[in-house]
Every structure is written in structure tokens, then in C-alpha cells.
Length: 341
Image (cartoon, rainbow, N blue to C red; front, side):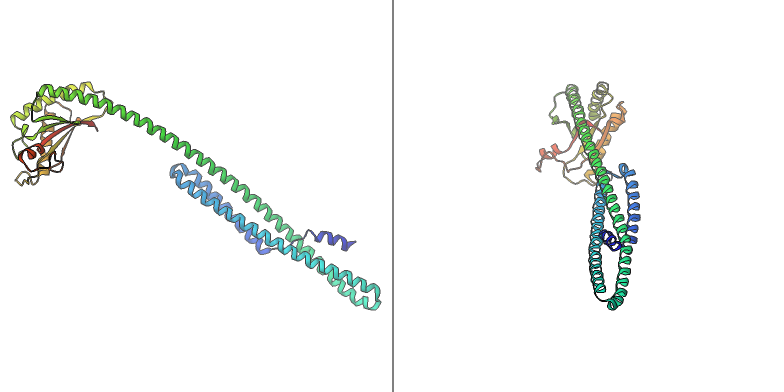
């Protein structure tokens, strides 16, 4: 009966893997440290950016999946070892039964066979003891695999939650962008209306002249209206025209709402004929100097400096591409553009 009970218990025994136990413990410690690092990572996710967080989280999930596959492989190896132990145990029990039969048939021969039976019985007991340890090892592996599965599920939930937050953020950004575009379009429309009023007022005070025209969103003066050839000093006639411009600007300042951050950009342009003088080394300096002179005179007439911008373009933004005097004259100009800063 003791042998029968041993056989029944032998069916549940497993081969131990002491090295596997140590490896698994090390794996658990490493995994816990990894989870601590992941927790730290999530704490700083909002400041470090969602895209990198999602990538790192996905990488960690893949690593844990690999660990789960490794544990499954180790469990399969332990189960294979268990099958081998069970086979050995079955063979030993069969041999034990055969020897007992021989012992019953032959008295003296049975005495020597009894020694073998005792030895085999001892081996069977040792196998049972070892198998109990193997069973505990397999149970530990099962618990670790279950823990890994729970951790992977938690990481998947966290990843899904992070992706959901990212989608919500993208939706909010798109909504804000749309609202901003609408607001900007409204501001542009308002500024366009004030620009039209301003240009209309300028046309009134300056009168109809061939050397002053409106081109698109710009008011264009031929350079000769303000300056002598090769000079950035405003002529007396030019100062009179700029004074009229200043009056129109001062009226405009009162009309445009304060929340519209507008400026009047004064652009200087020249023709493509080279200039080298003691004052100006190139057309860049000449065009910039003329724009600055206009801005300074407007400031002197009371226009706020924060509403003015001076820019020089030299000969690099021509109206006409020809080399005739009329083409060169068109390219020498001062442009006014009312725009947002």
C-alpha cells in the first residue's frame, strides 16, 4: 500500500531547477526595478512629451511580452523534465514489482533481490522528494507568469489611456487652431477696412498725381516726390507730402481699436544702377536711409514710433524689369503698407 500511495504521489512530482529558481528571482527583482522606472517615467510624461512617452511605453510592453514568452519556455522545459522523471519512476516501480515476483518464487534468490528492491525503493523515495521541490518551482513559475500577465494588462491599460489623452489633446489643439484662424481672419478683415479708409483719406489729402498710386495693399510714392537723386534727405516738397501723411495717420490711430496691433511699414526701393558715395556704399544703404528719413519725419509730426517700421530693399524688388528711364523711375519708390506687427 505504501508503494501504491507513492505511485499516486509520483504522478504529480516535477524535476527541480535550482538554477532556474535563482534566475527567476533575479528576473523578478529586475522586473520590479523596471516597473519603478516606468512609474517614474509616467510621473514626468506630461512635461517630456506624449510622443516619446508612447514610444517608450510600447517598447517596455514588448520587453515584458518577451519575458512572458521566456517564462513560458522555462515552464515547458520543467514540464519536459517532469515527464522524464515520471518515466524513470514508472520503470523503477515496474522493476520493483518484477523483483518482488521473483522473490516470491525463489527464496534464496529473493534475499539478494530484496537488496535491490530496497535500493530501488530508496531511489523512488529520493525521486519523490526531488519531485516535490520541482512541483514548488513550477508553482512559483506559474505565479510569476500570472503576475507578468497582470503587469502587461496594466501597461496596456495605461497605454490606451495615454493614447486617449493624446487624441483629446489633438482635438483641443485643432479646435484652438480653428478658433485662432477665425480670429486672425477677422482681424485681417478689420485691418483691410481701415487700410481702405486710410488709403482713401490719403488720396484726398494728396490729390490725384501720376507719381502716387495704390498697388494692391500698398500706397506707392515715386522716390522723386520726397528725395533728390542719390540723396536720403527729404526735400521741402517731400516734407509737405509727409505732413499730410502724418495727419491721416493720426486720424487712423484714433479709429483703429487698441486690441489691433497695427504698424505702418515704410519700404525704400532703388533702381539697379550702382551707387558708391561717401554717404552710401550701396543701394541697400540708400533705400534704408530713405525709409528711415520718412519714419523720423512722421515721428516728428506726432505719429507714435511703435506704429512705424522702416525697411530697405535696395534694387532687389523691382516693379519693372526693363532698363529704360521710365522703368528705372518706377523702381525708385517709397511704399507704405498698413499691416499687423
